[in-house]
Length: 203
Image (tube, rainbow, N blue to C red; front, side, top):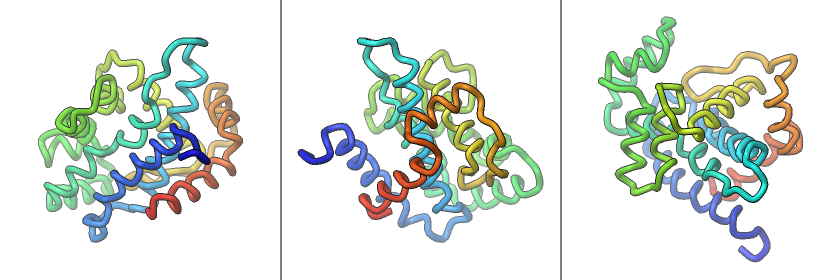
């Protein structure tokens, strides 16, 4: 803790807690390696965006935590409804949007599930509301917008989410994405930090 500082130590602790749930999903259809990259990169990008968009002296929102946990509803769905999730993957493979497939087969989407999980865990607002709104479902929470932006940038730099594979990296990022990526030291440094983080938490 003395060497890393309080905030990186807290981030590592959150990662360790989240990684405990991955071992039970080894037989799922999820691309768990890509999921881990997605969660960590969205967390880092969300934190960078929050840093860039928060006025000096104002408290920064808990963007890293919200980013790391934004797909926790999908993990809960996989753990509790594995057969339905397998059917979701089949629909997605046939061109159905993941959220639409989840709503049809599970009764709700993973963003809504994630918001409920976060509240059951006792996570403070705005984290549950941001998780529930990270796909843009009428959220009034600014942190949800940050998660949406971070998720979009992750796809733009060539990272999928474990269900949807990413296409090739975008030839040119928009100004917001360039600022967030530059704040983190560039794309290569982002991937290096993911590997370091995963090694630290044993993921």
